[in-house]
Image (tube, rainbow, N blue to C red; front, side, top):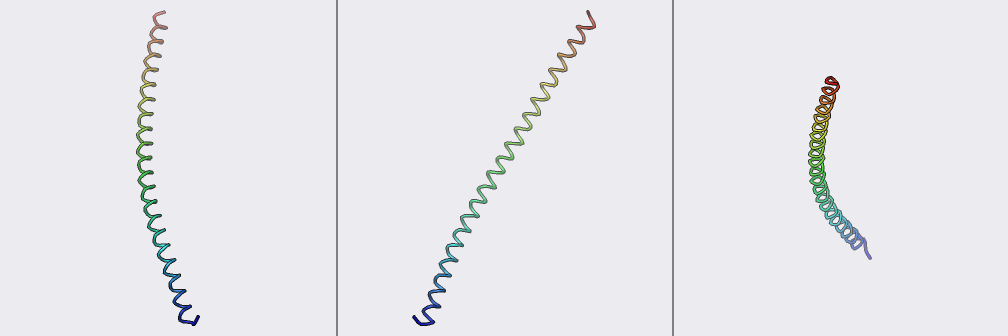
Length: 78
């Protein structure tokens, strides 16, 4: 094998590697975008759940306050 053939072989291997890496990079970018979307959806769900939990907590607090007021009124009557 002369020097020119060796160089051609090395160039072909380098081009193959570049093509593979380009494909891998494209796949990783797509996966990254998918994960970003999934993360955004999870964040939105988390925010919704936190809001619902706060609303429930506020409702429980209101009901407890009402019950305590009724108990206080009963104690005052007794």
